[in-house]
Amino acid sequence: MSDYYNAFETSPVPAPGPDAVPPELFRGIYGMPAFVTIPTSDLAASVDFWIRGLGFFELFSIPDRLVHLRRWAFQDVLLVAAASAPEQAPAMSVSFSCVLSQVDSLVDSCRALRPHSVDGPRDTPWNTRDVAVITPENARIVFTAAKPFDPASEEARNLAAIGITPPGVVRGDNEEHA
Image (tube, rainbow, N blue to C red; front, side):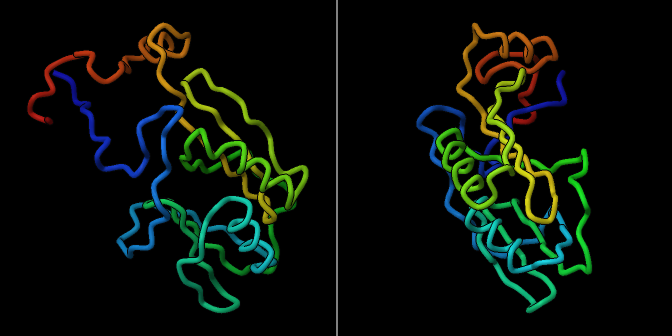
């Protein structure tokens, strides 16, 4: 029996494909299962970049102290005022899902605001297209979009080699999770 089962209904991320439509921006209040806190020495400039470049919106703020930003459900970022920001971006990154149709506009928006802020897009061996962005506060943010699944692709073979199979392929007894 496998401990893994399909639980895609818990996620706002749509099924991959060329016609995938991103979910609406999520304005509900919920207990956040995870979030990112990023210090910034210029709260206004950071908020502007995250909104106009990365597509987040301001959920709420505490003037001159904190701005809570969000995109989709469970994509929460707290920008907090700090005396300084790191001199350079760390090796660590945080990733947010997007859909393929958002990649080019995200790249264009970020480059228009900060010309050298974007690395990519680049395709990965695990079947995504990723864009890395260095924000004004030197955070490394990766936007990742699932590509349509091609069962004959190298990416499909990579995933199968580690036990990840496409929907509809039986891997084991998952009836208790269905």
